Length: 288
Image (tube, rainbow, N blue to C red; front, side, top):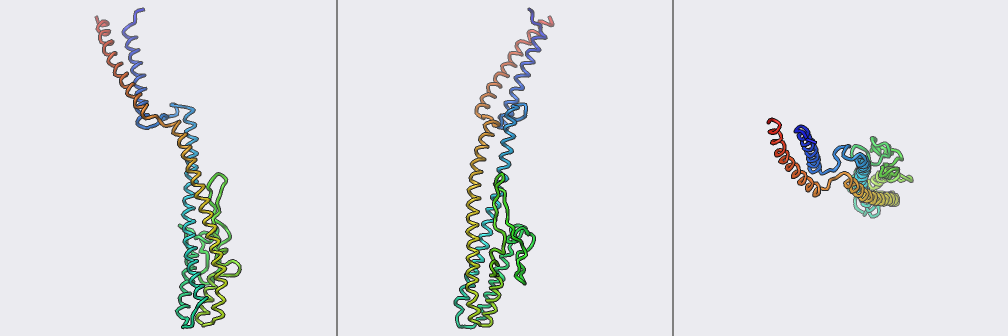
């Protein structure tokens, strides 16, 4: 059967188009680094990739929550450590007030009280740290020393259905059991001003009990931090595993893709050269 010039030209054109499309797809893979750049590249694979990406986004959110909580825990522990240091100083004054004029000691205790109530009303970001769930309310009234928060805690989602509760109830730390830290310091200041040895000594035990409660709270924070750290390590490992699976489905083998492109480029150039040799005499024959 005689093959017409038109049929030959159409076949060459179709092959050139096919080769050109293949070469462009390979160039796109090499440029993007991805084997799947559009759903049509792999219908099943794109579904897996979207699932992996959703999982990675969820893990990222958990890790953001954990990082923020770790910062909050460290900040809270720093605040409690400072308050504990002030308590130890006040307890030292109450235990060994000396025989000299107590005016300077009373002033020191007043400063300690003002500092501790300021620390107890600290904010983390825009929220009060020790007000429970009432985060827009200062934890303690600076005049009456009354607690203005509630018994709520700071809840953090660190996994599906998994939360960590961070202590945020300042009343448990500073005024529980009838020992109001700020009132005790206020009474100690008054006792020093009046140079009343019995009243001065009476402040020692409450300060000791409050200090113990603060240390318990700090220990709880240390445990919370370790749990957050362990959970973050787990999510990091899991994230790496999911990312490896995503990469296996979506990413291109750059070395192999570069080889493929070189082969396809050569084939395309050969096809062009062949087309030029075949089409030209065919057209001459056709015109003749």
